[in-house]
Image (cartoon, rainbow, N blue to C red; front, side, top):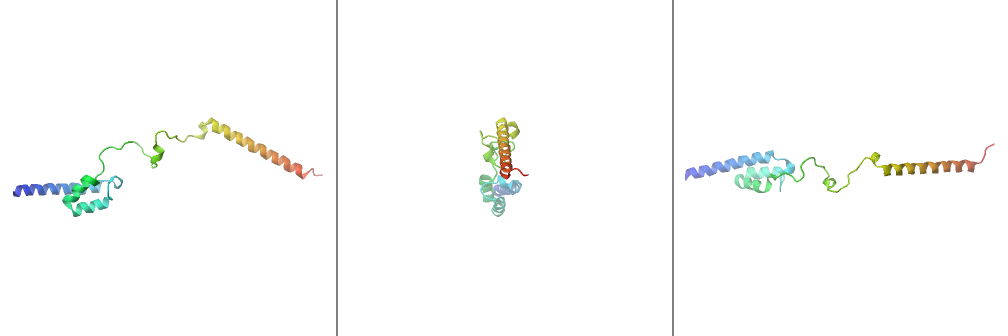
Length: 124
C-alpha cells in the first residue's frame, strides 16, 4: 500500500513541477481563461487541482492557428476579398483625375488674375 501512495505522490509531484514550468514558459497572450500570474498562483497554492485546472482550462491551445504566417495587428484588414491599398502611381484613372483638377485650378486662377487686372484698369 505504501508503494502505491508513494507512486501517486511522485506522479502528483511530477505533474505539479510540469505545470509550474509550463505556466512560466507560456506566452501571456496565449494563456486562456485567466492571466498568467493568476494561473501561476493557482498551481503553486493548489498543486493537484491547480495543475489539472491549468491543463484543462488554462494551457495554450496546442493546435496551430488558422492563418499561419505574418499577421496584421489589425485583423479586419486580413479579410478575404478586401481591396488592398495600391500606389497612386499605378492608377491611371486617378492620375488623369488629378491632372484634370490641377488644370481646372490653373484655369480658374488665370481667370481671377485676368479679372483682377481688368478691374484695376489701365494705369497711366
